[in-house]
Structure formats: structure tokens, C-alpha cells
Image (cartoon, rainbow, N blue to C red; front, side, top):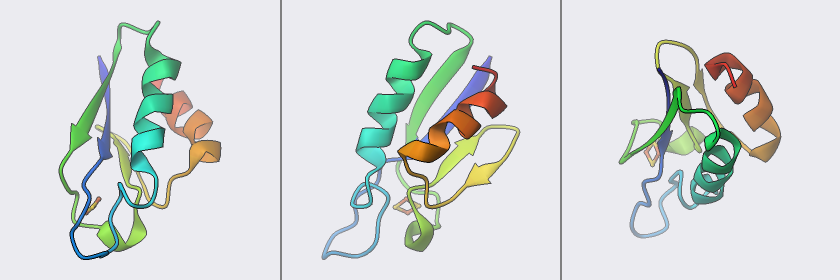
Length: 82
Ligand code: FES
């Protein structure tokens, strides 16, 4: 099974965070794209320590992607085997 981890943390006081930069929409898109793939798991993480360059998405055992947007999801999904 492949796992795609995405940070959904929202930091207080307007500090940069993955949620503030759109990670919640990315989670929904990833879940839609993988719902027919039982071998792919999407997990939400609280913070990956790279808040300034979020949204951050990690293919576990593979690459870590920064500043992810919807246009980057096909590349990430391809790496995960979708
Ligand atoms: S808020 Fe996503 S890495 Fe910190």
C-alpha cells in the first residue's frame, strides 16, 4: 500500500500554514482521485515543519513536495502509482 501524507495544519495569528494555503482542497481532490484505488491511503498530518513552503505533500517512501497546488496532483498521484 502507498501512503500520501498531506499537512492540514492551520496556524494561529495568520502565520503561514498549509491549510491557509489550500491544503484542505487538495485533500478533497486526492481523496476523490484515489477512492477507487484500495492500495492508496491518504493521511492528514498536523505539521511537517515546513510551513513557509506549504502546502506540503509527501509520498511516503518517496518525494516531499512543497507549494503544492491542484496542477501538481497528477505528478504526485503518478508517483504513488495511481
Ligand atoms: S503547517 Fe504544514 S508544514 Fe507546518
